[in-house]
Image (cartoon, rainbow, N blue to C red; front, side, top):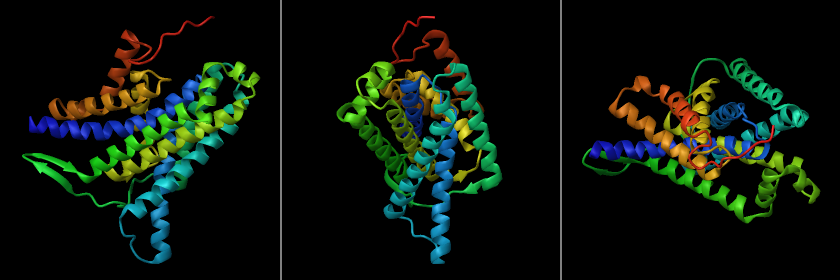
Length: 304
């Protein structure tokens, strides 16, 4: 029983990271009906932005940077800003010119941007993995039996929940959120009502990408190794989490992320780590076969 509780804690911690990244997928899909496959590479750029921030401070001061909440807040802010700029640039130069093109054209462009960022990252950052700097010291907060509640797990969960709550407030309680919901429902009618749809779509990319930056820092803390291809598998799992919960649904993205994290942890604990990555593909197939709209997604009729 104690082992199960430990795996439960680890799974919820991992799932909250998946949820943060899945929210970026589901926000863009809700507005544009577009799967932004480049989102996983935006997450990768956030991790490297945080890495080079700490490296730059170390070189300027000539001494190792002391881990703490100040450093954590700094790298979190830098990663969010870098990811926001990357997401905004991708939207402006890759997706906006294809706004009225067939969806297949936009999908192919998204895959192309993803591959471009992956291999450009290998040229710029180097193909070798890099050790993510220590921004917070991990320690045991609570132990009972074999259960060990770690500081990182609690921090990841609290930060994840905080940003999810902030996003919920933004979407449901602010004018920008109301405009986002209007554009998501009917872009043409929203434009007739005086909403600048291009600005709202750009804001959606900025917000979703900034959440990917938060996820990148949290992943770097928990699994301190980064490389230019790190977004490929982790981004795929976050995408599966979004589909599992119901892509286009914010609550579904969070639910899907938690289920994905728990499932992965339980598979590693009670079956074999060999099946860890195969789980994402298995869940995707099952969901698409038995419930294509996802757990919280809504069925929609489409006129063709």
